Length: 440
Image (tube, rainbow, N blue to C red; front, top):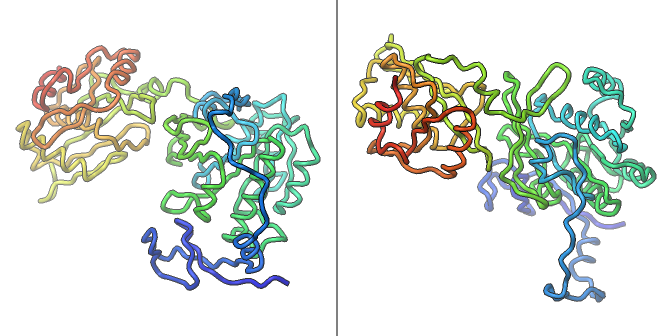
């Protein structure tokens, strides 16, 4: 019988130690070490094996350029955009997101669109009856859907090997899997790492793409060992506020495509649908000629999107004025208010200032600085910003406007949506000039 040794592994970075440590010396994360078990016999064999390999180095210049792999479309344009054109045969995708965000719904929508392919849905968290309720709500007859209520990864692999007609495998979720050949309970570091590796090897052997559903921690990162992110080919995050209908699909790793693309989706009664023109949707309910409203252009990856920035200024009822923001950095808001007071001559000492990004989205880039400043000034002066004005640019502490990335793309998208007057660092020099030029 092989001997086993207990080690402690950091869930955040994968650093191992032979004793428990409060703070990881590699990534400085606190209380991230979990107990792990290794086989001394297996590790010795792997580490000190003297058997020679027949594999020899290959001269890269002698390797002919291969044709790009044939991709399988998910049937959802926004999902394909993030993947880089669709699923690659043998690709392993990790789809992560908070509970209830819509991970299972979007994967069921993909299965619904893959009418010509058999889809194996491994459900470790839901029963077959629960899945039946969801597909019925989505108007999906599920003729091409095979449901396997199983958490034993060895049985799952056997089913994949036997059914050669399968075109896609969905595993919901990776934290529920276990293998009898691995130590620990389902969800433990050893089981999650080992089961993910087994499924990855199966995907490469059978050329069947596999989607693993994963949970996220309170910090917004994938739950489980950090090595899980290195095993898979692509990592997707489904983000959004459960109080709003919109969802954003991002990628943090993609071996077969760019990591800068995002997909926009909207939750509806019968499932989830892609938003092909998100800028139009985000501005659809905007009130024209309303003080405190300004349109800006935000880059989500390589994609320009138009958002409405709303601001409200009211006389304060307390000695200290409140500065509150939703979807925008409150610290940055404090800085911009100081710039408006010092460089633009606006008196906000006795006013509460509220800033909101309409639609429930969060924006973090400094290109929204100018729109926030114009919205605040518009609300304070009680004059609406001109209807055909869109603004973007970073505001410096001296009140100057600084250039931002992808200015041409932002302008092109704004003009496409009917905003002919673009206020940016190309048209104005400072915040005072921008306020005069934008107000009616």
